[in-house]
Image (cartoon, helix red, strand yellow):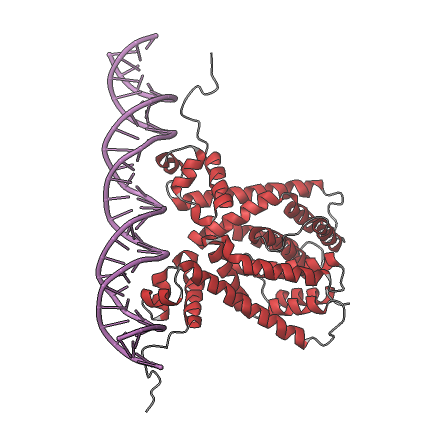
Length: 187
Length: 187
DNA sequence: GACATCCGACCAACCAGACGGTATCTTTTG
DNA sequence: CAAAAGATACCGTCTGGTTGGTCGGATGTC
């Protein structure tokens, strides 16, 4: 009989640790992100946590990477979904939809930014590279570069208001804003 | 003869302490914002610093308030400057110009946000109130609310890219973006 | 003298990380 | 195949260093 937990080991996935770290940050703030807190949230000892992430910086780097991966994946899916591929603004429209898709994810993403920026800005390098890439794609999206950039910035700002809870947009305004952005990104 | 520093006392202005704190954060990152570091930067002992700001939270609250005051003042000046007051979008245009005015100020402002969010999100309440007010003014700016909100978000995003150093905009794109925003905010 | 300003040594709390140990899995060897 | 040997996963205590804040006192002003 193979029980559900046939073994104590091989059970801790780094992914679970990263998600536990996310929970801690989102719920209790950046300063609550201690190794003890993360270990507690994940139901692991500190030693176990440090076994997978040898330093706190490594943990945060992992959080950043995971959040980035999620967004990149969402972006890929939206790119594939577009009804009018290969028209000007195609990429920008995907960016809009990916940004708007799941506030929760972006929320976490930006909290991770806070944590990383706090600990060591260098940890944001993967993100910087990614956005640099975005920037180039936006410039060659076929739209007017300035308009396309305004759209990009607006989407980034959308996260920001959520993150800091600065008059975060409620529906229906939120949907209207996204629709307006999409309209601006029409060829 | 009244020398420049006629006395050791009465010389420390809370404002100088706040500016010292800003310098520390901008130069060395959020985690370097310790009482010792601020006191050192200001040329004051820790006791002296704590005499004016009894807790670290009080210091950060002061930083937030100061940054907010600066932005509000810039906004007031831009409101007064507008060539076409009392036309639709008047307020939004002022917001754009105030946001674009001095990156350095907004830069500091957002670093303070980081610091505050790190220590205690509650410290951001004055900012939340301010942005709530902004939101209402935008809704009644005479422009299409969704368009006006897109513009607002884009300006917020402008700071964000600078703050995290995510492909921050360089001239001439930067000016073009601002001009595009202004154009969108024309009546 | 009363009061405000400022000093700097000191303390208690906290935290990242080290370390020595234990439990489980894998490979080697007889 | 069994048992030993080693590798890997994980635990939990301990410590060195840091930090926010206290406190007694020194120095100046009214």
